[in-house]
Picture (tube, one colour):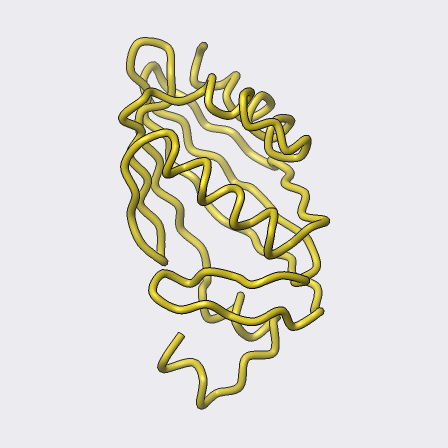
Length: 142
């Protein structure tokens, strides 16, 4: 797989809840880093995706921009859905709010042997919490 191909394949697999399709894109030792924590391994990454599907049963991702080199790709992505299930925020869980969410984020992906070997995600976590209606006094503990 070429880095530029990842965007379409990952978006289609994520939106279809296709765990096998996602797993096929990653190395076994896939390393994820994001605002809410870090994980190692393809199974840990699948658990992260399952968590998003639980929290936002109608979640859909779309990719606006892809910049790719030989061993890295940077994606500008939007995720939209309704918060209908518990959302893991690292060491804390946010109960369903029933509120809609549209989150724009940047994904940096590294490749090894034609597979994604690592990913780092950047997004506005405070903006996410505000969209979900988390009160100001809850922000410090979130």
